[in-house]
Image (cartoon, helix red, strand yellow):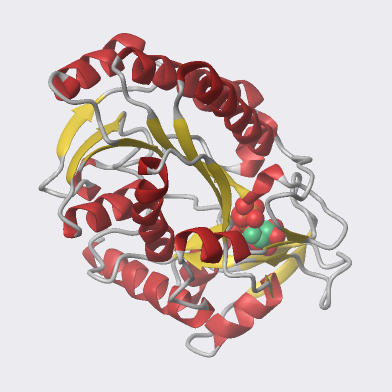
Length: 327
Ligand code: UDP
């Protein structure tokens, strides 16, 4: 099939491109390289350097590739994703995530592309009573990041009704790890995410890890998250293509259904390397606990995570060590 991957040079997008190409699909990547890197794009994928807020550039790429046949599916990964940054700069998040997706949807409609897979987030749930969320759990985002993703979910729903589109919205929980080839992974300066931060501390790239808050209402007082390997996430996208081909539209959680506290993650990494950490203040926008029910993904897609926390940490560790050696 012919699949367009918007944001295919970024972390999750590039892993999905690898999976798609391994499965024999033809892949067209559109990315503005603001977060992603050109070298992360699989050599067998076609590449267009375009910003999703630039309707003309997007339309040109779609026209070139959809001349005879529209894309069988568009996978949309291009977004700003850092919770604290979104709290400081909501405008950037509304412009890029909401306005950018509106442009993409317009261009899809114009070019007769009717199937979209959208990367949403567990952050749409916000703070819930139990911290365990299925897709029916009421949404109450605690940050502009979560708000913009929820706004896009709703926008896609209305576009689908108006223009006969199909969608699969994936709500990712905490994605981490790297590709088994170690060619791609999550690598940038000043990483704010937990697994890269703790692994960087373990291998001496940073001198200590600050635990943001130790007085949450959880077992050990630190926040609980549901970590899921990026290759498991990528695989779910391939399975979703079938759902769209059957004209189904769904919202689906992608998580492991297991929660680990920040302290438990540090303990797991400490089995391999010493981790220098200290307790600090709570971080704005954080909720105490967020863990997926992944029953729907299992039932509808036949998907379940193949890799657990230990493998996620091993894979991130191996990737980061390799990158640190390269310099
Ligand atoms: N966290 C932490 N220290 C760090 C980075 C993250 O204590 O240096 C905590 C953060 O406060 C949250 C959890 O780890 O409770 C997961 O944060 P991350 O940014 O990875 O993902 P989020 O759940 O915010 O999307």
